[in-house]
Length: 321
Image (tube, rainbow, N blue to C red):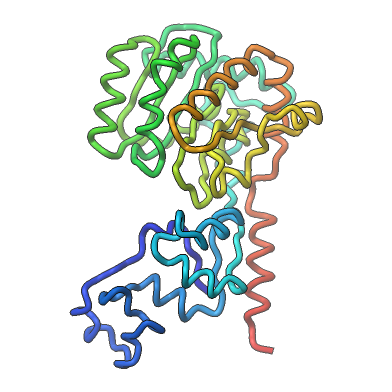
């Protein structure tokens, strides 16, 4: 069985490496590892695998289309009956707000409102942000085109105009890093940026920020939104892949049923993200609705239990009878 995480990374090499692979000559063909005159490792794997999985049901559908299939959509459509999407899970022991040593104060669902405030104050101190009770967004991400970070840069003036603040932790493309540094200098005390990655700080951000922004152009599954659910940090996500599968949008029906866990936006552009930020600020002003979303998210099962059982059933089917 072959599991595809991110189909953008395919392992394509010049045909000159083929003789070193130890494969029979007939393997260098359309029905093998040949891919536009080169050797495609992922392409070959997709052709020969008994079963194919990817890390969310929506991404399994998306990669069968030209928009998301990165040139392999035709092959995947041909193998559609063998393709299954199983959403990722997280380590619910490591990512547990009730026992997380990276938090200033740990919490559970019955006391999270007050205790998260202590973590919010700690974020303000770490990122040089002004003290305040307004909406605090966070970002924990690679700063890349795929993650939509260039789109977020375009929305920062609007985010600031709505009285929100931003704490960002991440690294990636130099130009995007520089854009965020420039924004932090322009809005000192309102935007704080840490370039790099810090595991403990990522936990604190989930445990104290009000919402996490995830504007990915495509996302096989995503983990930060699952951490956000676990910690009551509301995910604001693009309606793609695993983000669409794991977050219930705060539409009127979901809010009435107290099942909403975050906000979706589509299409993936600055206008739509800006509107999602506006929606988030309006919802944040309604503390009852906001706390309901946090509670619903914290009650969501984001562990590996269900997903691991699905993998086990799939492997069982592949065993010879």
